[in-house]
Amino acid sequence: MEAVDPRQRTDSGQFTVYCENASLRQQVTSFAVQTKDQVLSLLGESDLWRRPIVITIESASSPDQLLANLRVIASEVGMKIEITVNLRTEREDVNLQKYLVRALLLEFMYRPTGVTGGKAYTEPPWWVVEGMVQLLRRRD
Image 1 (cartoon, rainbow, N blue to C red):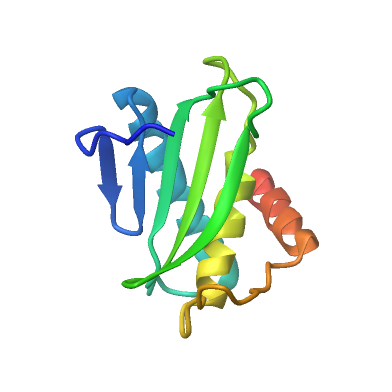
Image 2: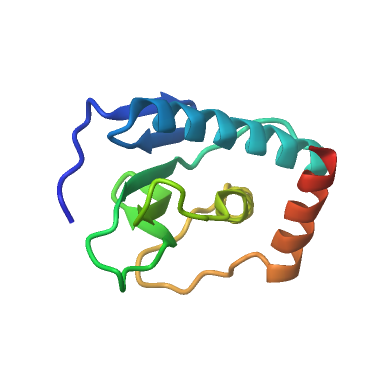
């Protein structure tokens, strides 16, 4: 994977979005913030995030590459969550909202303690993620 140019990023509080296309980068940032606001509303929580969520949108280097991937990373400065989207075409169908909901729930779950490198962590149940996505779609 190539190094990402730091000038091709947008920071929005909890989210840092990397993408060469400035318009797409701004759309993803706005969508992430909107999704976060909606998830917090569903949970009845205020915005007290502690863990950053990094979203990287890039061109797929091979047709076998996963369309999207979510990783939890433990580093010296603490836990962060990364979502990587590998687009093969401009109109690739990625359910980014589902990845965002999953990332936000992980951040909420591990807000107090973080994740320690090399140790297993628990994912939010798939049915909670899917149920939240469906509730958000109904609200839209």
